[in-house]
Length: 113
Image (cartoon, rainbow, N blue to C red; front, side):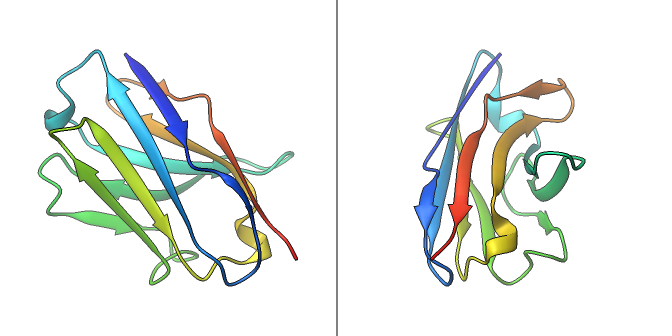
């Protein structure tokens, strides 16, 4: 199982970013996928979940209405569209396959003026 995140970077408050997580080594379309984030010294926070078909999603209250999780099963990729970014969204964002306990290497998102 391999998960490779990309798309992080530095963005001003109110800006947008789109994260991608390319998956391989397992039947992607059958598995629920999640995005987490972590700030140094704090526990990893679950951000968003998308189920295999892509029809059902779930979000942390802190990002609801601003972030959108989606997936392209033909590309074995899960996305996180982040709009209206705030300084408190600054973190390392990780892709996760819950049933496998698999994690990517993370991508840094920094929201700062």
